[in-house]
Image: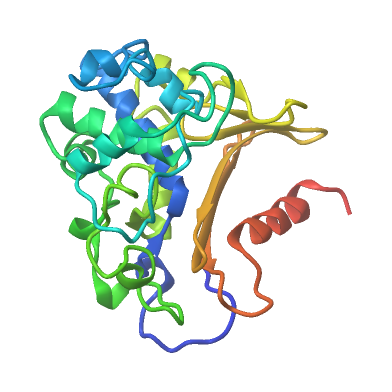
Length: 296
């Protein structure tokens, strides 16, 4: 683990610093749903109408698989991340929102869909999203904390000019349902890399669920330059190979993980977006890829 950028004396080793992984949360949620599939508590073809009792007709046939692949036709968001909103109020707002396209018509990135998946996890497991994540996904694999307030320590938080993760990302309170399942999870770089290793070596999921997770299900653009799997992007880079990756961020923090499938090289970068000239985590990841996988 290495820290780069402006020197800041905070007394924290880089491996102890808590970071906001942003929309990489979707990778974690997709793994949790896949675990639920392995346990026989949800099927990929089950619909919102199968899980919830109050879904309007236009959304009742949306499947879990469509939510995982951003093809459910749901809006990107139904409110601001910092707004305090509980699960029931979020679901009511999500179900009342306008579809951006017909379910199954194509790719349309949706934070709303992944928060609905978090609600599915809670309903079908009988536990909170964080409890299920810790007890069924992380702890059995011997992994450290990935979570919201239950995993948060303000003294260890990455900080920006806007404050800690608690203030800058969550709005000065625990993460609301505008974020649960789709963004804002906190962890350390060391823990997240260990999570990726446990995922790809088959420790967490069955081979069939891992295959579904990393399969290129739906094109993200008309050119088919990249595809969305379950909570991750599948992209074939000419003369290099297939990468799995996901990024995330807000106006304060950004993050990206990436793995070259053939060699199992895994990378995770997280940082601040507010440092002048520093660039985003995604820009840093592009430099890493270019230096490692492009001939000089």
